[in-house]
Image 1: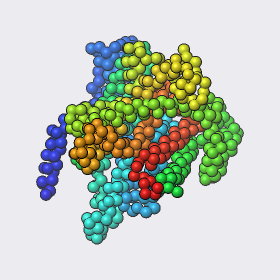
Image 2: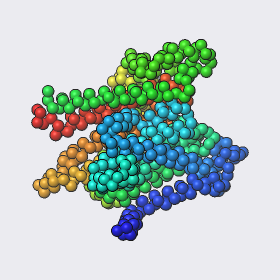
Image 3: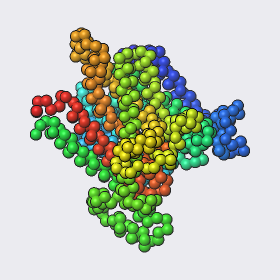
Image 4: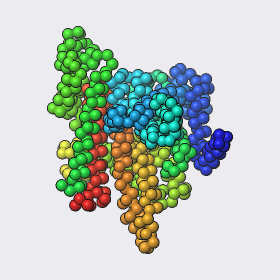
Length: 285
Length: 341
């Protein structure tokens, strides 16, 4: 059993990947994004903040994505921005993963009053259009990158908490849980080590679907001037700055960061679909 | 009381705790301002005495529960504070600009449904075919496109390159005279006045922003249509209808789609959440004079009363839209209200 299970999982994964080339492409694109995020600043040909006299050059051999109104290389800025955008969205998703897990476990395992209070609290968050709530939170807490991360985490938490709550709830009286309790494990230990791991596969799918949304959300917030401030390279800000030049025809300022942003979100969305196929083939839509 | 009326009444009652929750969160946000809210509301040039005065007028020296009651009382009386940048009461600013946002959002959703539902039906009739895959990739690409980027791209293509769209600045070109305000919806107001030239002008301004928002909201509607169509198409009554020799079109549209639309109506709630958020970005891109661009301007100017009024207004709008969807559901679902009569 212990040797057979990983074997069959690997073959299952490779089967799904072969069946679904789109998912394979998504994994490759994720790899490329991670390389950009980790090594980006040392790979790019120009300093993303250094201005030069070559302003508003269209894309050419030395500046692949052209230059902006201060003569900065758009390609370098787009690649370097990968790290910041990833940090914001991964940070936000990680925070909501942890918060959602804790809240969901409490609500699902102990039920009763805890459940009512937590569930109603999450409903209150979901009663807002989520991007608007994120705007309100950043406005109230102050206009910084950390607060953009917190705001994105808050609006994503209900999704995780609901998944965990449901998964924990259906298992709270399962045979293996009662066995673990009879063996003398404390409630906390049973929840954390015996029940919660069962919720991880659907959580991973949620993470991937959510990442794309978190990237969009963070870029949207900085597009309207919240969080990251110029001259820091960030996709949302670059699109916002480029927007001023689009009606005079300098398209490359906004289009390349926008395309990159779209590619990142697209990667996570496809990945989420693919992961869902792997984890739960019945849910395939 | 008929069962249907009872369900509707119960649903209306359910909205009350949600509204209380929304107001509570906005209250927490108003009190969460970094440092002392009184310093913010007093402005930069304020001295100790005027800050103290602001603190007293805002009631910040009172205990929190009492502050909350005062806050709720003010909201109910229509006192949502004054905007620093426009100098007007926030509520009147918002209500003057709301029709512009609503016109855009509702038109975008209509457009989105008109495209997404046929797409979903097409994908569901041939699952696994190239059309199905194309549909999946296309809608995923649509939801991956940041709305602000789609908007800019459309402006570049249709305004700069092709020169067939009007300049992306607001609801009406300066060539036209603003219609007399009846509903605030330009399309309706101009139609009422019989001014078809201005109607055309307003419609032209609407096309690009509405298309931008529609592209973003395609995915959830198309996916849900496909999933629920698949389920309906594999059910017994469809098999019976097919076996009875009914026309393909009649089976698909008359039987399967009508039933498949019910779950689609439920997902509209989530779609509205998407759309209202995207609305802010689209309004900023197209200089649309709605409440979204009002909030963005207020954010930049640190005009907190205006931002909080906007957040509250959007949340109340969202609650109302969800309520309408649920009521609509109760009205169109034939299974509800049969036995109660």
